Amino acid sequence: MSQVSQNNSHAVSRQTFLPIMVLYNCALETSDTYRTFIASAHNATLDPALIAVYDNSPSRQVSLAEEAHLLAYKHDPHNSGIAVAYNWALDIAKSYGFQWLLLLDQDTRLPVTFLAFLSDAVKIYNTNKSVESIVPIVTDGGVAISPKRVLFGRLAPLPEPAPQVADYEVTAINSGTLVRVPFVALLGGFNPAYRLDCLDHWLFRQLYAQGKRVALSGSVIEHDLSVSDYRNKVSGMRYRSILSAEALFVRTEKPFIERKLYVIRLAVRAVKQLVVYRRPEIAKITGLMIYLIITQPSRIQKGGMK
Image 1 (cartoon, rainbow, N blue to C red):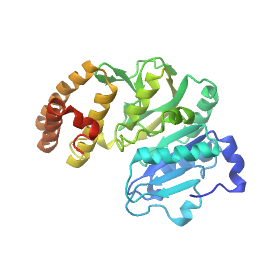
Image 2: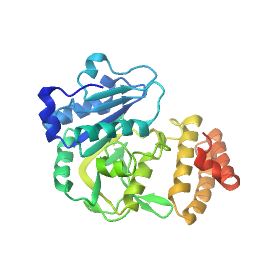
Image 3: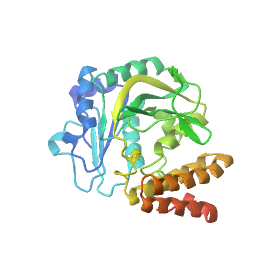
């Protein structure tokens, strides 16, 4: 692990959040997130070296020279997933006294004002213990994809105008999310059952279940959500992983009625995948999940089709 130098120890003491970025087969220098993070840090007069990077790539994506300018770095060629990466960063945050953890993917474009807005939001909510997470508006191709309001059996856009602090259940994608370190620690860390997918849904479900609130930071960031394009970007293997995590989340976190409705939603999805997207291979995977839910529901909690 890279160590904090004596020169930036003061920066650690005045920065209340630790960014954790997860890489996979993407060189650090080419990551949209990292490049825009550095610009945003300079704009906010924060130290861009105060970031932890977890590298899930088979081959190391961070040079030794680059590692020297990071607070912490770990290469995990076995690709243990994002929950393991976040828990690694959680331990670092606790050891250095950071009160918040900033979750970042590798393909998010942060506006230059992002960290300044985030720092201001932390000052506002730091003593408000009902707010345990602060999130930006996230767009993909100009369409707002996060956060979303959680309704019965579906996700919906936030009402307009959206309140600064939501008094209803919301969910948001991982990248750009700020979450309070003590809250996640009380949960026992990030749930390793969600290795890659639905960890964000699980986290925000825990927030809501414990009566905590989510605030908006005021920033708008751009993110490449590959799973939004079934036609071109999601392989059968990737979709199988996504569906297994989704089914686990519904079975373990949702009420009985929603679990029943989920089977109907999957059936509609399978038809759409077959007829609209013309992806019979992923429609078949959806059909298999329906079969497992009906005939062998206990398998879902053991990893489903993984």
